[in-house]
Image (cartoon, rainbow, N blue to C red; front, side, top):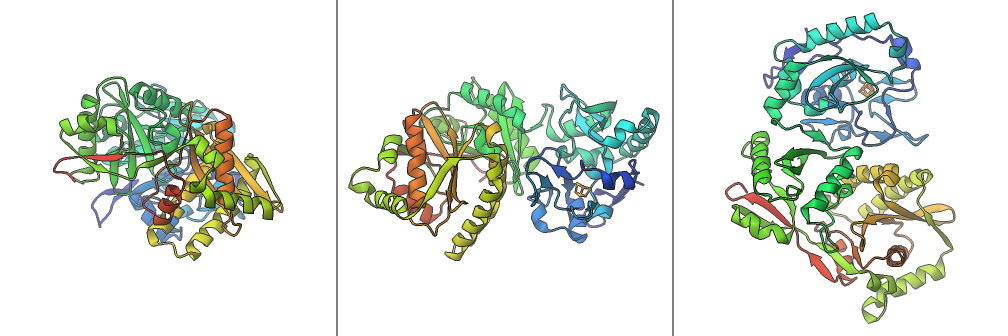
Length: 501
Ligand code: SF4
């Protein structure tokens, strides 16, 4: 039998190794496709339900593999020998799964796959042509295997169980051959998540979200950095971002361990009232009465409208916005200390500055580890330590996908070793956003030097403003951002229904 009752919670859980294995083990062990991924946030990394996470942890997998214990895709780990990423359960020395007996349904199914059809209206079962064995297998054998699997998926309770985990259903892939539709599962998913298709945010969706941002009229030189698709996408390895079209507006949802929330107000050309009402209704359905149902990153121009609609607005940390020419010049008494540190760095060090290349990833990774150790050695509080750990997955995405995301990077080498890196991108034609800056703290003035060079380059390319994001409530970060004399602090609010916060 495919499912069994979990005595603790009474819900159905998948039994380990319950699905028949189609590809012979001997073939699997020689293959170099499964369990390895090109990017840290690959949409194809396996998804584990809550029960499967418990089994995997019992089987010896580390807790850090799962950003959300209630169900999540695994956090991939870098291949120390190369540029790609492994499933954390994959043993590269033996090419074996360390938790084979406890591997999740997602892996048991492969090389079959659950995915949406091209129109994203029906869930289908297909077989993946990326699996070399499937390209040699006889079509009638594949069909027989798929029939057995479909019979198991069709058992009472299974569709409902799968429907509770929308991430088990992959996006349409052209190289997956469709075998059959799964109407019961499609219905179960719509029953749980609403009639409009819920899409996992992927790289291909960024232009669509960017168009909706442009239509919203909320993007301008003095807008919050959150009004860009990349800002959210880089956290996609840690949180799960989803989008849905509601009443003609794009609604960007984030799924955190605490529950679901809107990462931005609905984005579109019209009024936000109707789409916001629908989105909040869905959040209530998904979160119950939890106060986690909220709208993040509300700009000041939407505050009166949201108050009129019955929302309570709570201020969050504002973004720091600077005049770009101030930071490029560092002129006058008020920038005396930063200027002195830049001069000291230039005087004392022999260094090279170059554009970030994909091959710099290992050097950047080593620097991030050193930098985290330095920060923790300085007595960082537990919240700061948690932010550092969370940031690792975002950095992996930036290193791996900088070019595709339109993010530009610079690295500084001292004696051949990468000692600093920074990444940023254009929020508008005149506002450059400094997304990240990491420097070896043992070189005085390096951070100030790199920040000034970034601003000088941005000015040369037309920047009027530099957005340096918020201070995450970290006192040290706040002091250093204030010391650069922002031209303005861009207000940011969180909105929740009155009576729900
Ligand atoms: S859980 Fe095991 S089978 Fe699944 S991707 Fe990871 S290593 Fe491979």
